Length: 159
Image (cartoon, rainbow, N blue to C red):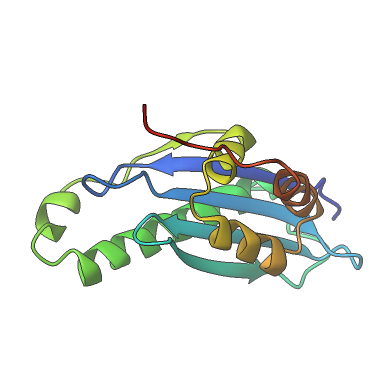
């Protein structure tokens, strides 16, 4: 099994009057062709809180037939796990609002790496982006974050 390293960015429903949480999912294979998936959830409260996990499947082949095992399957599973972690965060931290926020499924919408660029340039959650870069083993995600870390930040001033 050999996958091209890939990552995706997803925006979730807002949690009130703060920025929108976002999820980064990644899929790749190791040098020994073992499939891996990662997810990173950034909750925009304070300087940002990062939750992350790596999924490992120590198989070089997958039984053919009922399901196609590819990057999409890994990315979808990682996204589902991140959404569940966000729901648990809401239940634990948004005590009074949690019944309203959890009354429906946690929706996500696809975004792209431009969201990470905007977050970096506005100086939001830079620590979370740095931590993602340090924790990830996905070459495509690491390369993108290294490039993003070289971008300037916006200077902001009131008029």
